[in-house]
Length: 139
Image (cartoon, rainbow, N blue to C red; front, side, top):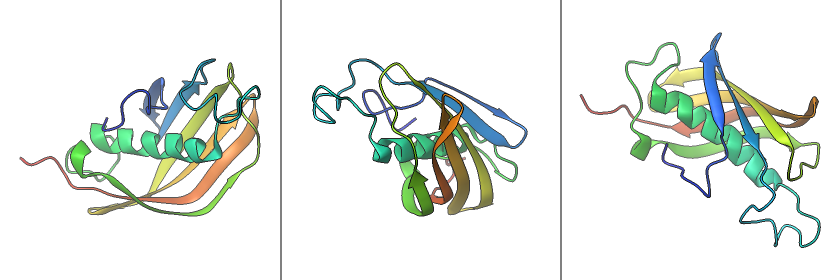
């Protein structure tokens, strides 16, 4: 993964049935916790979207999605856009984020996904169209 701690928001992930699923446990002491917000730590909505993007990146790096010729080069995957995205629930330290992402279009250099996140059984965020650019690892 190009993302690394402390900016990696996936603890575990797997590919099954055409989609990636993953989990992230929000730690008691995250690097952003004191500033977002002091005495009332909240996992930022932008990081919810980042976590969903990271799950998509992981699928590309592993080359698991149908139609991929080979794994993507982790140094050549970049966020392009997101459309129809929303956060609906506050998430806090001690909670576990459950993510899923499914490709909707995968043709180099563009990969588009629909992605969503739950916490405690409730939908916390979703992105109807998350788009990344990528290239394959050189052969």
